Amino acid sequence: METMIRDFLRSLHVLAEDIAVEPEAEKFSANLSAGLMSRGQNFGQAIPMLPTFLNLGGQLPNGEPVLVIDAGGTFFRVCVVEFDDDGQVTVGHFSKHPMPGSLGRVTKEEFYRTFAQALLPLLPYSRKLGFCFSFACQNLPNHDALVLQLNKEMQAEGVIGTLVGESLREALRAEGDSGQLDVVVLNDTVAGLLAGYLRSRDAHYSNYLGMVLGTGLNVAYAEPIKCIKKLAEPDVQAYCQQFAKAPSRMIINTECGSYPLKQLSPVDRRIDDKSVNPGNALLEKRISGRYLGAHAYETIQIACEEGNIFSPAFCQAFARLPGISSEELDGFLALQAPNPLRNLPANDSDLQALTAIAENVFARAAKYVAILLAGFHMKLKAGQDPSQPLAVNMEGSTYYKARFYQEQIQINRKLYLEDQMGYYAEFLHTDDANLLGSAMAAYMNL
Image (cartoon, helix red, strand yellow):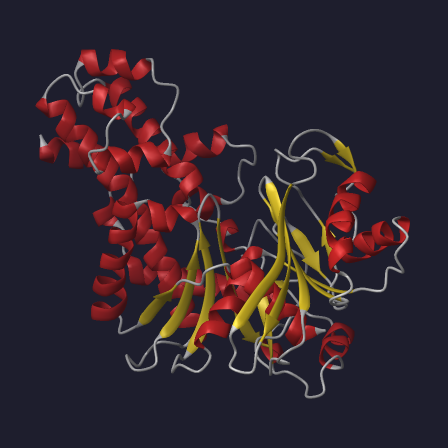
């Protein structure tokens, strides 16, 4: 039975053990460089590699409070952040509010008014704001950002195409405030990078990544400005003139989930065809928590269509299952009950096949995480000395909640990156990364 399952997975081109990490990492690394060369977002041909016009580094002005808004998902948070002389962080005047547009349709005026009204009580403390706005945006040299896209769950008319910082200032003026507010806009991946750098900047790391592996996928890092060929010279000058000492690097929001994978398996194609954005976010659809359950579901569906892996009773029960979530898939392997997958097997062969498919889904995704990480090692030439590893500030619910997936990622990191390729990385986690990273962005860039 084990050989039959392996042959079945291999026939679908999804068998994890068939993936060669190093050659694929070289292709991924080359595409990262190509994204720095191309102008425009170029989602179809190269990783977008979006310049943020934000610096990684600099001194923290101790004792100076800054304001933070962390907006994403169904809630947003507002607070005041301050660093003391020892680098310790104080978060105060914290409040949490429903995200505008998450509970019903709003206009763009109502959208930004909600943020303004939550921010107004905190303005006496500071006129500097780090705004973590975790939606697709184009960052500008003045630290504002143009909204390109909102999640499909967000019902906010007219927000796409607006400038986040300027729109917030307009909303403050409409509430009777002067609107005098310095704003830097960033996303959660960039905030994670900055927070990880804050917590570990005195350690001996060769470089830093901020990575989100949750329902989505993204990575941020700092790139030498001279290598960002897509930047126009006036934008480079405008960026550098903001600092007393011109920075040598700029943070890149890679949007690497859009890596244009060339070959799709029958399972990948089914998932892509059913998605809201066919042809896009192909690496994200292979790695992130939003899609891992779907990989198992489509693989089982094909097995039942072919009729030689599972019993008829299993397939009849499976036909009544509307779908599989990543949480259910991980819970099945962890022997959690109740779990809808545990009710499917009619015999030991069914259970063996279902377990093998579930394990392979996570193992295959973990192989692509290894490819991604190895590609960044190659691009940055970082982590080649075990005493100076690459620091990876890892955020995201999927990585921390899917235990089997996390184990596979760490196994692959040791086996392929360390033992075979000589790359060393240390995974970090920072509490309240979005809040701290947003405060860092305001401190270092305003």
